[in-house]
Length: 314
Image (cartoon, rainbow, N blue to C red; front, side, top):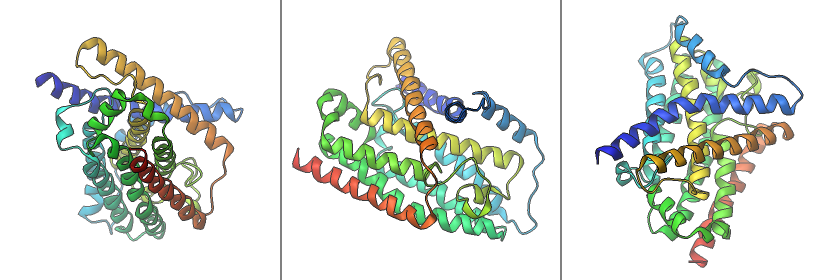
């Protein structure tokens, strides 16, 4: 039991440590694909260190909610990292960390950050909050449906059991239910993490921002926590895509050798998915805001088809 709890803590530490590096990898690959030299892979770590050292400047209209939001967002994403099978499954927290808990913890961070964007009375913060909630209203149900499509065959909404079921029946990964759910969750990942074609994380053009618009009033350690939480959320979505749909390498025992193999497999899968995101972002332009709901509606339809296929092929 103690070893399993240590592995849970290791997952949280890995999320904290690897998340900025994954963002740095995507930026580095995008720069090279665009013919630029780009910043080094460790630039996000430098940025976090710089922001943690900077002075915090607060709006005179900001309330306690504005100050508490970075800690709530960061804490909720960190708790999710304990519930998602990153390197091993099943684990003790799997009993409480089912699909519903993960989805609502992610939604909690989105909701609190949207309120914080409205709190200082900034026009751009309110605009970003409105857009973020519009996206969340379509994206969060799609996450639940896409993973529930996998849970139909596993007979559980527990993420660890879904991974164990897929490892026991690897042929199911080529089934239509898995492929449709993967496509739905991939589209939602782009929307939830502010990637192209839904949002452009590299721009600060106010009229097109969504996620970044809610962070304009933040500085110093508050901004560092929010940027770190955003990177962690990106890693968690990538880990869900990697380990729920291609779980090979996930440790089913807690031996040191199995955990090392699982860690190596996780890094390789994250690097591959990060490269895919970088390639996609160099080939796609940002959608107009009014076209984003159409894209998310497609992902919702794919998730429904995934559930239908899972029941039919069961």
